[in-house]
Amino acid sequence: MNWGLRFGGRWVHYGVHHTSPAWDTEAQAKMKRMGIVAMVLLGLALCILLTGCTDRNEAFIQGTWIYSEPSVGGITPQSSVHTNWTFDRGRVAAHSCCDFRPGMTGRYRIVRSEDDQLTLELFDLEGATDADAREIDLILNRTRESLTIQGTGPFLREDA
Image (cartoon, rainbow, N blue to C red; front, side):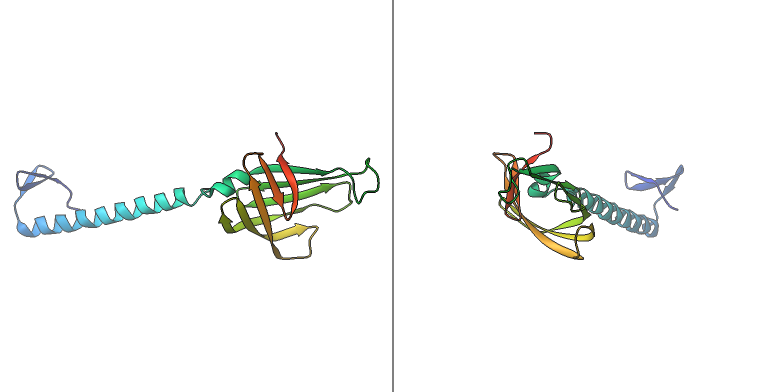
């Protein structure tokens, strides 16, 4: 490999001065290729960093959300359903208490994200569902720190 530094119009390579125009052209071509490779690698690194959880709506929903319905079907005030949804960087889980249905787990991807509305596609689902994939709509209320999921809510953050 011909690596070196250029001093005063000459390439210094391991203590040897090169003045050959052919060597200069070869070295310049190598340096240009290295510059292109470096730019491609930098671009790839930026793409990877920027494609993470950068959607502000997706960032907002991360964590566990809880909704408690005070009475089921108006039967008695003592019976209630507690529903938890957890969103964790592409993974989703939903569980309900006291309605004898098993939970659901899977993955999600963003279909639409506009203003304070988010549509997610759930896929690779296991548990209480017969669908391979389905979409859910979420409405985000940042001032109240709550979600409405498929028209049900408000879901509040677990730690709130």
